[in-house]
Image: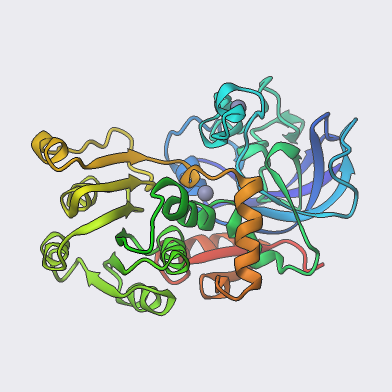
Length: 364
Ligand SMILES: [Zn+2]
Ligand SMILES: [Zn+2]
């Protein structure tokens, strides 16, 4: 079928173009998009070499309505509303172990193609990368894998649900699953974009004793405080390491920046047996230097995490419940844009004018 997609080319603005979408195969459905969030990962795939062959259609926080089922699909029905999270094969040892974020099938992530190397999307008669995170949702329609799909009640607002697919899931699951934060913890969260602010909301739900937000933008820190941070540090004005030591250090830390110097600061702010989880995407080749004594004798841990170790089918319904209970004020993060204004949305995100831009493909 003919559809419109925002085509990405290296270092260039997105361009809405007429594309051709093939029928869904077994294990797939065609979704008519209502909304899709923009994540830094999309820009990284466009502007850095992360294995995504360009031109490509990106977008991996899609919400929409199922309008065609692949052969044999019985788990979902026509007309159902769904949220598309990250892709996973559902069959490898990691998927079977409840760790789909570490699925062996890399094709389903940044490479943006099916496991067999094919793509459902073509432009001017040529196949292009069109299965990014098993969806490619910067488009009016997507052929997506059902493995990463979660059903949504139709009354839920698509624009607010979209970031649950990646950014909000990553922040909340990092606190609740990867860091396994508890009420007695003091937690430092470095970087107050969507992921960091979602982490703060999660730390508030957990009831962490101290929730310390670190960023360089005062407005973001103000928002962090309103969402649950008990302390804020503007690290452009004050040394975060010293300020954290002044607070006695922390038992848990989350880095959402991917900046080596920030990761080092976070590590050294840990109390004995403290844990640091890194979720920020760093520049290729980034390295950190840590004192092995500070690792060993204090029993500290440092590890990375994809999507906070969440299993979308388990964790997304929990986030929806918190949203319905009023404990997840997603409207504080989301700014909506018409699909055609995708480049404005990107500019606003990069300039910190919007926390989480969400594109609206259709109101109904
Ligand atoms: Zn897998
Ligand atoms: Zn993402």
